[in-house]
Length: 341
Image (cartoon, rainbow, N blue to C red; front, top):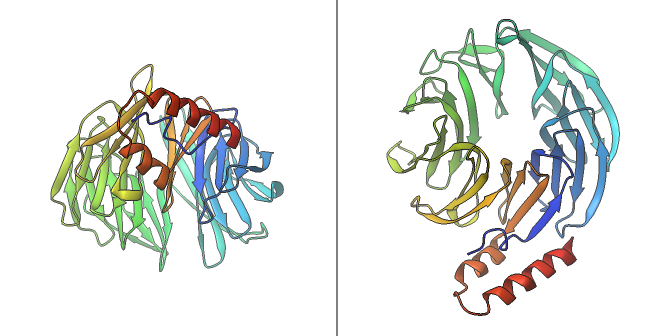
């Protein structure tokens, strides 16, 4: 199967894609390396576009609000119009909502020391009023809101903030990433440990953890050395897939695992089944970000392209037999995508 030809929609942001969101209504919001922000509806029609201050790191959708971290700023957009924007101290990083407030994190990097020196957790109203800022020495590498606000911390303290209380995790190593979903919260650490919110050690991997995602069959870990490790809920290894640097990963429809890699001069997208076997792959520009909804998978690339795969069309392309009409089918698919654009 030609993975690119199987895409339901291809759009171009005009600059490297740095953030991507698929909404419950299947709309798509993409943010760029130079601050472009665009939204398309579920059929791929451009609804609006605007320009933010700088590279967009994170996209948060809260009702009609689209809130982004953009360079040093947190910026709120409604229907393509910027409603408010505030400069934080250092780079604006992560976003979530809690108690009807918008929570943002920031961090200051010291070039001389080669480390993050100060960070902050900022509380805003939906109207953009700053309510509080909690400054700390540790950089938040993960933030989520459940019954309490959960913040995974880097050096020097490491561990996790749950509400206003500090808790140790299974290792003293810094948190590098985290995930909250499917009724569990997991943290990846620099020493290769994966720990749970209750402080238990879930697994110990061979190198630092770049990302963790929850899947229907358990969780999948992306390691710094380019290896994917899939484990069941009880941490039994299900499959392993070594390779080049992993730039992004996402799980989606039909229990498929989608992975973007960077191979020095070219990117690649790999699609695996729940057993870890490679179903299809494609050479691409460098994959940067990915996201999913119940029926769609989206990946944003360094060349500005956004590819979206839709469950029904992907299944149809997967089941097609190789024949002499494949070329004509590919040409027809290209024309249909062109019409959608």
